Each structure stands twice: as C-alpha cells, then as structure tokens.
Image 1 (cartoon, rainbow, N blue to C red):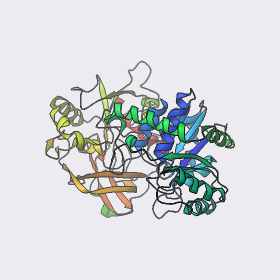
Image 2: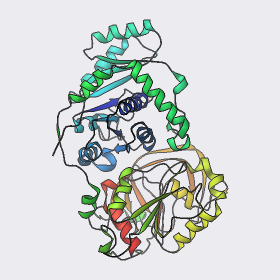
Image 3: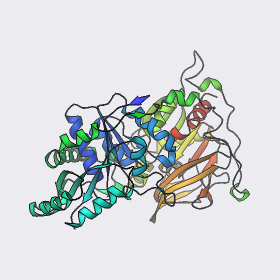
Image 4: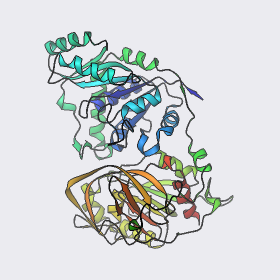
Length: 488
C-alpha cells in the first residue's frame, strides 16, 4: 500500500548535539496544536521513546534495522504512523553511525533512505562559526541518497554568533530552519549514556517536555519544518500487523532453527517445558479464558518495546501490567510473566523490601509457568542485587560495576525454552552496568557468536532469563510460543 504521511528525520553529526531536544520539542509542540504526531526512534533506545510518548500521547516506537531487519522498517513505521498527521523520527548517534563494522546498517541515514524521509541536521554550534558550513556540506554530500533538507543550530551563544553561522551556511545551500540558544535550565539528567526514564521523574519530565516545546516554538521555523515534512514522497510498504504476524508463524521457534555454531557453546539444555497447543493463537480455544500474562512496569522496569505487548495480545494473552515496587501480588490468574529491562539497581532496596511479591514470583517460577526476563528482569530473578534480596529464582548474584556493557549481539538458542527452539538465531542488544555471577546457568539461554563467543543467561523449568534485549517484531513466533505455553 502507499503511505503518504508527512515525515521528518531529526539527525545530528554526533551524539550530544541536541537531537532529543529538537525531536521531542517538535513532537510536543505539534501535538499541542492538535496534530496526531507519530513518534519514532532509530535504534534500540527505550528511554528516548518514553519521552516521545509523553510528548505526543502516542506509543513511542523504535525503528532498528539491526534487530528487526531492513525489510521491517517501512512496515513498522507505517503501523505506528497510520492515521497520523505527521511522523517525527529521532535518529541515533551521528547520522552515518550504525552497527560497528557493518557499514550503514542500523544507521539513521539508512532508516531515512528506507523511509524516503527528509533529514534535519541538528548541529552543536557552540565552538564553531564558519566551519559549520564545511561540516554541513560534508554531511549533505556524503551520501546523495540522503536528503538533508535543513539545519537547526543548537547551543548558539549570542546574536553575533548566530549571524556568523548564518553567513557561513548561506554558501552551503542547506537552509537554516532553527536556532536554539544555550538553555541548561531544561536539560534532562542522564544515566549510562541515556536520559533518566520518564517513569522515574514524571512531574519533572512533563515540565521538561513543555520547556522543549517552547524552545522549538521560539527558535525554529515550524512552518518550514512542516513544509519539509510534507515534501516526503509516498512510501510503498505494507503495514505491519501483530495479528497477521503471529498467524504467519508457528509456535515452535522465534526464527528459523539452524545448527549450533560450535559444540563449545552447548553447556546443556533444558527440556521443552510444554507441548505446543494451537489453541493458544488468538486466545484460548473457544469458551476458554484468555491466559493472563503479567508484565512488569513502574519506575524500575521501563524498558519495553510497544510491539511486544501487541504481539502477546494478538497471540491470545490478556496482558496486565503491574509494578514490582508497589504491588505485593501478581495479577489475578497470572499464567505467564514478562519482566523487561530498566534500572532495578536504583531501586534494589525497595524491590528487596517487597517480600510478598518476591515470593509470588519465585513460586510462579518454580511451578513451571512461562517467565521471560530481560536484563533488569534477569537481575530481579537473581538471589541478590548489590546485597539486597531479590526473588532467588536463579542461583546467581548481581552487582553494579564500573564497566558499561553496550552493543549489538548475534545469538543462537543453546536449548529449547519458552521463547525459542534450540538452534534459533536472532539479533539482540546488551546495555547494562551490572555483573551477574555466574553469568550463565547449566542450561544457558543464548550462545553469543558475534562480536564475541560466550554463553550467557539461564533456562530452567519455564524460565528464560538473559541480559539480551530482543525485538519480538523480528520474531513473532516468540510471543506465540510463550502464550501457547501459558495455556498448555
């Protein structure tokens, strides 16, 4: 089908230039004018997407060509943007930066080309004047398929500074669509190379987003940005649909099974926890109650892709969100549990103090019910985190470290689990500053094959726990398989 939603990609020469300031402020400003704005983020970052949701009132969605494949970028974009007046896509890192050693893969430039979207380049001009023209010229000419339709100058110091920058850019042929002055008073605090999540500072975040919208209103040529967005040509793509995705796959694997890359990765495997039950698709069999899948939320567990919940519901689950910081019981009739990422180390004492819920999670895990835990969820299932008691499901202890583990990974399922059949290959992302000892159980979750070779994570009974973040839209059989185990 043809998608004709006006759209912009907000990019930059490097991280820290002001992409989130401009993208979030523009989203909030236009949403405040009554436009339906579809927010998107290039790459695996959950946190920026949370600010986008706050700015627009719509789910922030990630477009990651490494995790999902280039073929899904257009359909996932169309899924989020259908029925909207405008789409704003915030880039990742520098415009041409992508997966290490793999060319343009997963870069903002690649996504812009896949979406046929014009790019606005946000430049940190705080330490330059005439050189800005050379920088913009280089970015605009590097790849002729990337259309840079305008520049927004950020961190401009004075009227004279602005005058010098504009004079230089007059020769570049790229129009200036905004000038933002330094404004430290509305900068957002960061942690581990990213912003502090919205859920941890909701009131402050609302104030910050309002401030960003005002900065864009005052400093940017909003009508020029809208005109540029409307210049995007029609995009001929299908629209991704969670229901179609789970119907088109079997429940046996989250991807095509392949042989293990090396015997050294296979340190044991867990038996398949339950037979497949076709009734799990589109809900339980007629007359049966939908299985409740509890999904951890709240300030400690903020990392989750919107499509995961959509896929679980499409596969027949009744998804109920709970907060491990506040709720002392799992939702009624819980048959499966999903605990995503976040920053549990910030809330280790509070999580440890909620003993009733820790015991409920441990009991559900011991029963063999499906439990999927990613990163923060992995830590929550451990015995302890920085000395605070956790759920004790895994014979492992976690602690904060000085080293940040960050990057894309290629992985293969070592054994069968509630998420994947043995041999299933997929791509994931690691992002943590914690260490788990040991890092893998007798039956590991994944064998990582690139960029390094090691096993990690735990598979035991119905539990699948790992540091690896994955995007289920790339492997919708993950959700179907998980829900089928819930109704078995």
